[in-house]
Image (tube, rainbow, N blue to C red; front, side, top):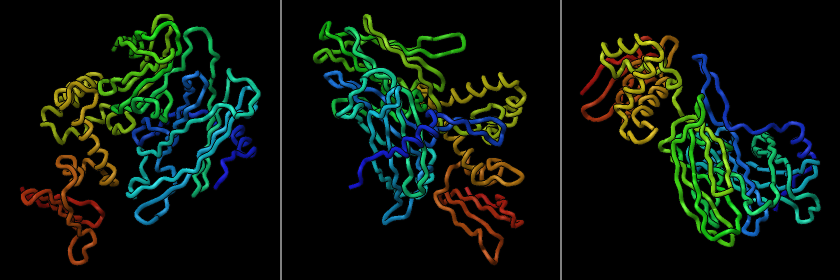
Length: 422
């Protein structure tokens, strides 16, 4: 059995090299602007309270598949990594330490290189060692390290947090974000702090201690943060029956109707109130959707010539309005913020650019890119790219009555459409 020990050397490394966790990173594109992407490792720490109001820490960690090194095994691919944690008070006294050896197993090789799929782990920590004689409230520091046991790469982080004293009749935790509804045996804390993913489910949770009654009525308000100030977009009242003065306040956030942007969640009841800001990011957003003058280009494939010329002649602000109106009218689910048709079209554009771009043209401008965008992935590809007696060619088969033939006439990898059967 591997001992769960964090050495003093590791603690020293934490102190010297750990950086505060940030969930979002900016990646520069070839077009000169940046796009938002999740960090390879994100986490969320939440100081929960037991029914007798003792503090317990929940820690959720997300590790990107692409960050880990996988090795081939029977039936798939395996990675091993270690999650190590140390907690110190503001005098640098070690209050708690833990480590866990984890295994990740994937069947599909493509998943091992995914930047959008993560290994999620949730841990419950006693805040203080049993023989801890120091203070039990105030400021503390979490030191976290993820160690890839195959590549031996180390990723250290640190985060300051607070453990409040029990004060008055309205003691409570802060607000945590959950992947799903919590119950007595299930507490699915999200692995990101103050960052929610566009069009992904999310819950908000807080635990309140109050001895004034068995039933309390709560007001939940959701604000959108705009340049001119807060705008109330959702409000809801509901009552909760407490057990021995403990009230679990949780609500499902309306993620299907919330667009990207900054928000404020406020929970309140009589003399008690808690707030938490958060931001929604569409991390899988296709690059072309970051700028309307870029997004209009591949729409040449689906617009008639007159409409396309009109859109291209608009100012940027006018184009933005035209673009939003165009896709809004074609949204198959108009009651939600996610437009499936828009996302599918620009995901195809992005895939075409990745697969078929060359020195002269972006992928969507090539014949194969155009057909891919209009018809999607073919049911079958009859591939003769390495033909010896003929010029390299491919036949994309969608059905018996829909096939496309592409030929590399000049041997430069530029496949031109030469035959279309419908």
